Amino acid sequence: MSSENKIQLVRGMKDILPEDMGFFLTIEEAIRYRCIQSGFKNIDTPVIEYQELFERGIGGDVDTVSKEMYRFQVGKNNLALRPEMTVGICRSYIEHGMASLPQPIRLYSIGPCFRHDRPQKGRYRQFHQANFEIMGSRDASIDAQIIYMAYKILTDLELEDRFVLNINTIGTPECRKQYEEELKDYFLPKKRNLSFDSQGKIESNPLRILDSKDEDDIILSKMAPKLKDYISEDSKDYFNLLLSYLDELEINYKVNDNLVRGLDYYHDTVFEFLDEDCLSVCGGGRYDLVKILNNQEVPSMGMAFGMERLIMHLKDSGFLPKKRDKIDVYVACIGDTAKGKAMKILSELHDCGVHAFGAIGQSSMRSQLRNASKFSAKWTLIIGEVEVRENAIILRDMDEGRQERVKLDDVIEKILSLIDKKDLDKWSLY
Ligand code: AMP
Image (cartoon, rainbow, N blue to C red; front, side, top):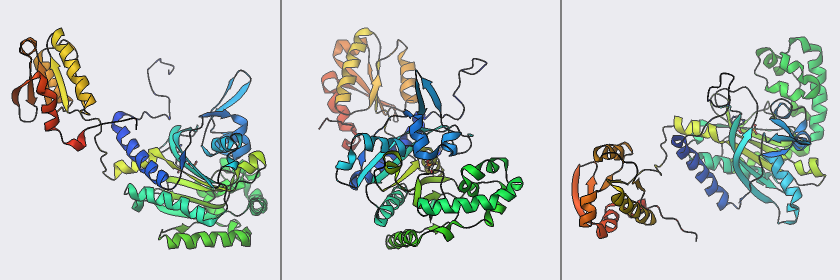
């Protein structure tokens, strides 16, 4: 709670309210549909891991770890809330010996991540990622397949026109090391002209200066040595092959020499789908984290969508999710005996797949009917003492205001005759 003891959300956090859940579920379904059809298996790793895992995997000097990671200690354990999902999945790959499974292995997860960054539009401290990894193969076709998946998911959500695929190669870790040395030599004499943030990155992570939004940094970055001049022939061939696959798949892209991505573990391919404000909805690239963590070669390619950013665009596009939790029938009753019968009717309606509720409170029939309208029920079933005695129930059509008396034994059948079969919500274990 805040210092004034006010009940309020922690800054940078966001409730996903019932009215937003329809968007969340729509996206989740679109993702699961594309994942299942292309052999992705669902994995869920904990949100809590050892701090050291992220320091070794992502890099201790990377902002995501050094500044933004939620750290806490329990007993002797230094723990962290995951700022992204890939490291935890690689930890799980190593721990469960997934290298012995047929490779490449395709894994996806949807869940929360945490970064203590400055909250702003589309940037939260708890947000949800839909994360995808293909592990155990270095083949440009895998890179193309991951990017194609992202494109198909955006197309399924009818959002593809809102984003430009930016793509780049950052070469092998060796090319990058050499380039980083050149960048250090370039920025050091100009240190005083850089923003305070970028000054601190010259030694630790000079590549990140190229990502800075500060005006002076941007001007200096424009004249800096170019990464593309340090890329090996092998990496260039790999990248060109990837671009030819994207051409074949008819996906538009923009080769963006300045795209480097935030995390140290990437090499070769990096990409982001950016909106018109240059906000990324999906980003990814090639990495070998299993090698970094466990010295075992498992060349991999991954990406993550930000669910909140997808929701933001879906809302902005005017899309309205299916109303899954609409109420068909409200059951109103007067008296305890009637309430008992009403609960029995509700239970039978539920078993038949009808969305229904009611049988609550002691209020007057008028106020129960008002309630039924507020919940937008299409029909209300009314049962009072007289109806109990006569073994009947009143069925009211809420739009038309018409009522009819139905025998209690026939009421379920009557309701089922009014509802379209496809609207019945049935679930079964098999
Ligand atoms: P990253 O792991 O930084 O490559 O992020 C992958 C995706 O997660 C981005 O493209 C965003 O859509 C989303 N994302 C990253 N950080 C945040 C944040 N702080 N708030 C909301 N979404 C985020």
